[in-house]
Length: 288
Image 1 (cartoon, rainbow, N blue to C red):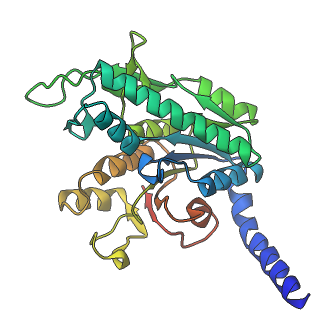
Image 2 (image 1 turned 90 degrees about the vertical axis):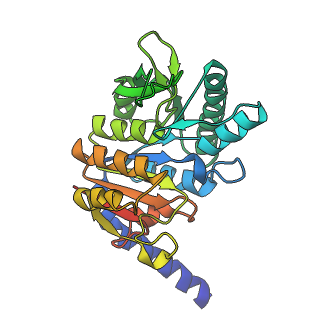
């Protein structure tokens, strides 16, 4: 009995500690880019969904923008399609865009279903990201196929948030000027959404602990980073490869008025709650 009472008191203490954060972020919009690299064994992490539903029930307005990169790569390999990237963007022909669309639709449906399973209400949204076709992105003028640059965000998303009933789950595929489906960078799409919604916070959930000065040393995690420091780390080639577009998306979000952005390890159980409801957090936060 005494042991049970002790655990109950401990839980009550945790809730009391969270109260200032709940008050601070009540009514605020939080945009979360859920990276494909954090989808383990082809499945969306249930703890991530629980975190988002909890955020909704304590008064925040979470918006999920999901990726699906590794799943897409695997599906393309199975179909005999190779992977070619230019400036970090996947060259996408007609057959490839159909595969990309199929995978992202599947992920979107799974997230919405899981939200319902844990007691929330999700709504899957597509054709939210307005884009223009990129025909060439380098001096060699490589035909990128159905690759797009983000131009804007449909006002439909803000309308869903205003209704305050559902958690929007955004498929990041772009829709072009000719109504064609375009493959856009999901990090950049999420950053643009965060800007358009004047989000309080923008999270990128990925498969690393955050930004580190030495990627082989977990103790070198940088807890707070400014735009100038991030740009310096990219020049020094400390921030490299797939982390570059993520950091660039964070910079664009901050420059567009988002107050804080966070790169968080989505593999850690309840990583979102740890980042929101504790002073220290667990990843890297970037500030203007």
